[in-house]
Length: 111
Image (cartoon, rainbow, N blue to C red):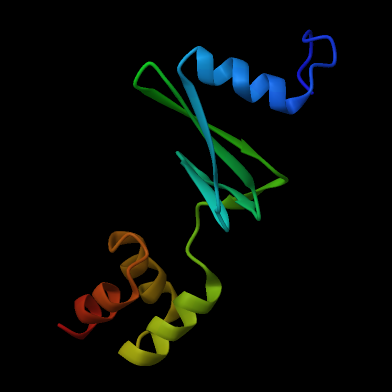
């Protein structure tokens, strides 16, 4: 139900939206990630809907969000360090320069 709609049932609401030229569709998303300046906001198993109103699409995302730091995952650092035979500090720097791309970081360190 929608606030302020007097308990209107969902079928009537959909019919009214259709008459107004508003299309709504559910999107089967597994994960939504918002990339922030200093990290990420991750929503696993979200409810996502797209509403198309007069050619403009609006997305609504609902679910429990968790923040992830902007740093490079420790497992990636260890893998790059092992593969390129360098210290973890060097591996972390290479990963940051490669925007988290493991293959690019290893290539950079082996040159």
